[in-house]
Image 1 (cartoon, rainbow, N blue to C red):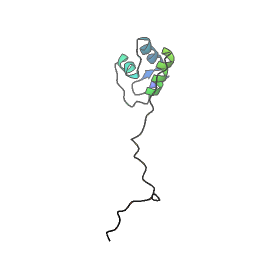
Image 2 (cartoon, helix red, strand yellow):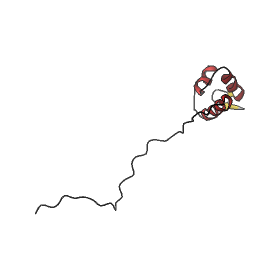
Image 3 (cartoon, one colour):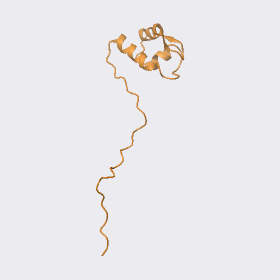
Image 4 (cartoon, one colour):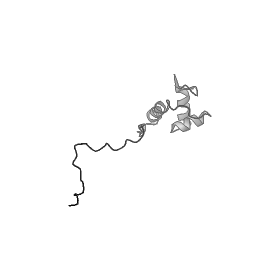
Length: 85
């Protein structure tokens, strides 16, 4: 089964890289003389590394852009300076 279509890396190739000491997806790419292209294979590689190494790795969640603070409610009370008399 292919894990990385961009670089034609199969599951057995990932296992070979892990056996060779790879503990991160970048090391798997390096083991096979290639680099990340689209990144869709990274979660599978991380899971394979964690399973094979018996480690509980923290797998980061991909986030979108930072979310801005929500706007204030239009019903919120507003402060206006007292009118000059």
